[in-house]
Image (cartoon, helix red, strand yellow):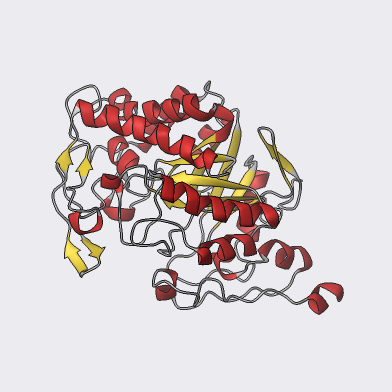
Length: 367
């Protein structure tokens, strides 16, 4: 039976274990989206993960979601991320960077006055956090065909910058209510042109983004994250059994590094279908209590259930957040740090970020 501690390969990249640190927005970048020195410390602390997928970075200014989110659309962003990747490499780690365009999840106060864009002019039914506090979401501008072409090109350019910054590859974020997910879902995509309506139309933008990124840096450096049925950010999907198999089939022959499925349930037919029809590496993110506390094992049991069901790698988020040495703690059966005040995830600074303790050398030697 496959263990979370078994080695693996992701294309040409050897992985020392099958535990992936999931991308988690932490709001520690500068006001301009440049990664800061504290971020290099944070990720280097967690370099023992088989793979780190760094937090969502926007490929263009209009795709900005919230304040202090990282970006990857100019040379200052590249330089900031390079400091992070160098620190992680020095600690023995491996990193991909997640590329995320917010779509309607944004606000002019967060993007230099730019109105968010989306497949259709349907506002998020919620507020958006801005430097001035929470504000009502604005109605996004419906993307023109020129907007779509430009955005596809921006994703490809961002991927090239990520490689220049030292990342082994990129993950295109197609879930959690952001732009690509908005194209997939009928509730947020009311288009009647070639990018809406039918399932084939709604998956087209995602397919074109992924194909452009793969052409830019090579498919073996590219992953795609999907979140079938996830309701975050006002999402509702009533035809996931049609949309996601069609998307998987459309990308099955592209040679991507991996497909990353959020809240994967090994007992559900959709997960089983994806595993059967996706011949490449499959990263699965387990269903764990939310917003309640993590299980005492940080999700290891559910991770191993997913490996037994055919996943190749498993991603954990909050367990890595609270435990910089999560892999070793799980290996020796040491207790895990409890997750501290949820608010510390997003407020900036060291608290709840780089100050989670690791086990000391004595603890390691005693096992």
